[in-house]
Amino acid sequence: MVDKTTTKVSNATATSSEPAMGKEPIVLDGDAMERFVRVFEASARRWELVVYPALLAFAILAAYGFFLIYSLSRDIHVLALGMDPEMGQHLTDISSSVAYLSENVRTMTRRVDKMSNTLVDMSDKMDSLDTLDPMLVHMRGMDASIHNMTITGDQMRNEMTYMGRSIGRPLSKMNSFMPW
Image (cartoon, rainbow, N blue to C red; front, side, top):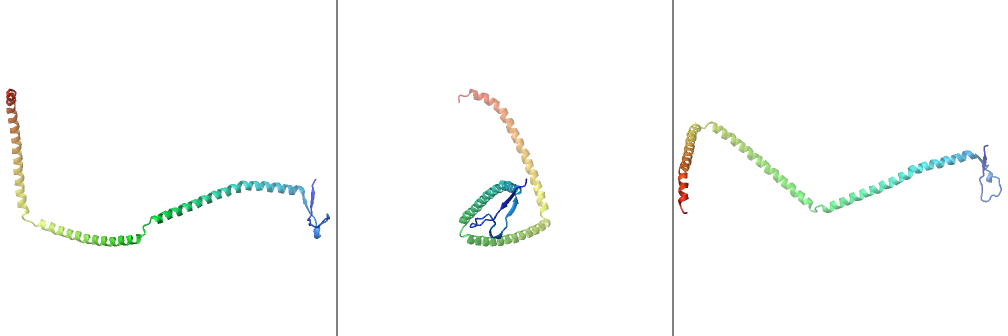
């Protein structure tokens, strides 16, 4: 049941059925070779199912990577064109302005410190003022006088309102008789 296949190494010039150049024929089982070929073809098909889509995915990713690098280089080019050619001079001006500003802040700090010292001196002197108590007495008297003036002004307003009401009624009757 086992088929035996004989394979001969042939030479282009050899016409006989005998092995050329002293080599012996190789004998392989026919079924084993056939199974090997079928298994190899099935395996190759499985690899084709994996390799071709992977190759396509790699090509797509490579194209996308190229697009990203191209976009990045284009954006950097636009950014470089938008840069100020005299930026170095401007940065130098800014650094000198910052130095001037820091000196002004130091001066301001010294002046505020002097002001705080002056305020401390003023508060010490306010405690020692003897004339403040008589001034407070006079201010209390002024406050009482202003309060009395306010009460008197309010009484005058009430009197004027009462007088307006008492004169207003008879005058309104007389106005009805007048021709104008």
